[in-house]
Length: 230
Ligand code: TYD
Image (cartoon, rainbow, N blue to C red; front, top):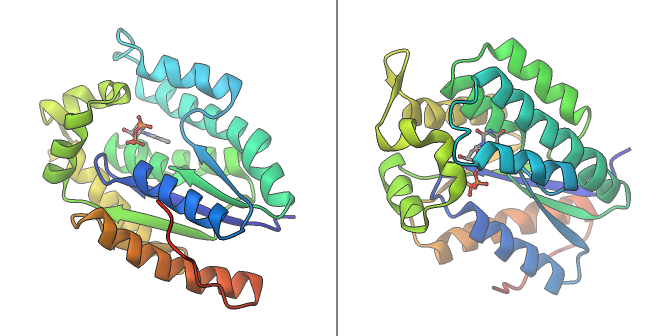
């Protein structure tokens, strides 16, 4: 039985997701709420090895099916070792990306059949579904510009798609991913909150704190008014 509260952050590259995950994590901790921060892919001994396979130069040619299975394997380990036990202890868990990333990138982006995606997502997470997902929606061009300023390794995975703007079934991969996220959000309006991430990070943080105050007050059945720490 899941007792804690599970928050995931989703969005395109350069949406500020990782920075915000850290701000939320610190804020919750400093407000006396026991919280753990997780990340995908990776976060476990095997998961980190899988992450390495996914990002290593030379592995760009990895097929879509194997890619899906590796992200799924990393998630299954993260759920088993970090996320599920923490939720069972009643903690708040924040995870930087989760199964919506697989639906958006491998499903909508790569074009793998959704029934296959759903099957593997369910297989990896079972009943560990987020209580709240913050979808940081950034314009793809702004996002790519921000992301390439930091140029992270894992972007190699989508180098052709991002840099050379490769099309999949007649539509840009990056647009397919973003539209995919919208569809996922529309199908899960209770769980997923869309945040306009084209704005300054301090404005995003304000919006997020407001959502968290509401959701956590509901969860813990007392008034929670978080004081920001970053
Ligand atoms: P990462 O370096 O963790 O960067 P960020 O999350 O800050 O963008 O890269 C994760 C990359 O892997 C990102 O391009 C999205 C992709 N990804 C998938 O394609 N499927 C998945 O299931 C997950 C978790 C990530």
